[in-house]
Length: 191
Image (cartoon, rainbow, N blue to C red; front, side, top):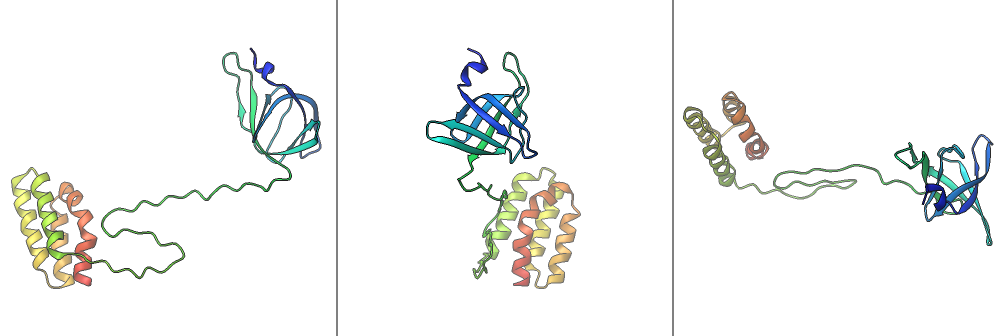
């Protein structure tokens, strides 16, 4: 069975520039029309007319979906269409939100009146546990743990930022471990 054997419908392709392709062998399906590319050229907004016993149905091409020849399959269109009397489809806006960490949220066209409660002990304890588990250099580990103690006892923003600066100077591995905790630590200091 060849590609042409599946094209049991005859359609007329009407381009936006006025060009017409008559008697195009096609396969008309719900939302799609398939036909070989050597019969007609189409683009977004062109019309495809199908005559049936019920009358002429006009389809609007939303996406031509051209495919090059491959193996025994000739170059063809698998056009995504809609009936002219149907409302135009709109693609949903493509966006994604990635939220990470405790108390993460996304607010769109709204005001966030929530309150985040951060347990000071748990932030520093989790940071210590992570450093103990992941730091392999004992010297760096002891310096990092001492700086976590300094961070925990800091009573001003200057003391906190100074301890954070020293912590970050210990190297990339310490930065990688400590970075996720820094927003919570700064929130504790700035309130």
